[in-house]
Image (cartoon, rainbow over all chains, first blue to last red; front, side, top):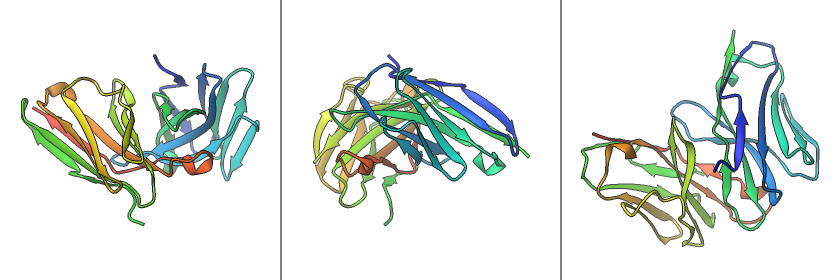
Length: 112
Length: 116
């Protein structure tokens, strides 16, 4: 059972455009929602994270939008650059431990 | 800080052989995670330790897989006997193991395992 559902599986965006990746979850006990970025041949690395007590968090060109009532959160990459081409994973953590549940990943390609 | 260290980076073995993957977490981190990544199934948690104690091993596929953490600075994931379907990239990650932002998991570079 996939605890966190992520879409789309792949995304192609023109340079300068906005990339949007969506995730949904069912478990209301989740209390921490990070996004990870993974380049080929590397391990995932934390990009940005949010807690459910805020609806939005922005760091540079990266923004998380969080909708607690809908149990959805999304990553927005503004002014997308070819260097942003990578696989992005959303994740969620339960409040009774530190186990993370990862989405299936989105392969982003930014075309110059 | 050197980050999470994994070895070997690549492993090619034949079906039936024993495979041992190694991980050194970031110093001071109390939690260690083993993940498996494949195209078909994405990133799957196999097992995680807190203060060297296995907390949840429900993700371990079968008895052929075992993991140990004899001390705070070393963990192994062993597959015996290995099968072609075990071919994947295996990641080790560590975190401080406390609630809050410090729960960030830091991933190693991974071990690419190929079982022929």
